[in-house]
Length: 219
Image (cartoon, rainbow, N blue to C red; front, side, top):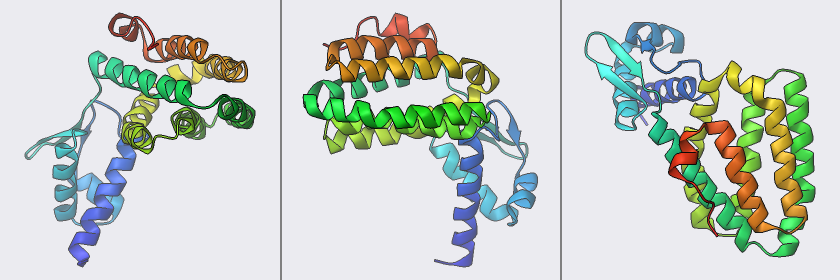
């Protein structure tokens, strides 16, 4: 790999990480020059990175002005929540009863880690723990294709949660309680109850648009 390619990849990784973790917030304009200084590269690899990020749908490049970080519309947000509902509830429904019960026991430790992150007001760690928590549901079904689809959605989920910022922090106690409810449905070996609880949890987190677009959990 050439030095120029390495610089472009480094710029891409740095800018993308900034978008996903909320450093570069939606609807803010990014400056090529400022990014180059922050990352420690010339403007050429930054320009290449911005083109790549635009192709992926994260930004819109405006020549000679910079790049605008794109937000997520209500429809896209609802579609993301809908996809997660389908993936997670389907996987849990297909998991063996003993797998569901074992997962419930393991996830108790994850919820305790979420409590500790909240106590330290570490929103970044809380979000990563939340993403891993929900991934466990998809993993329980044993379908690697579904797991791959989930992982492809993870960056959108991460971007959305970070964009909520203080609003999400104010809801963290409720999120933890809802996670405990999901664990209880697993422990009770109640996949239908899990799907209904998950739908309510996603609706509360992602907003009322999900209620309109996805009125019923999959059966």
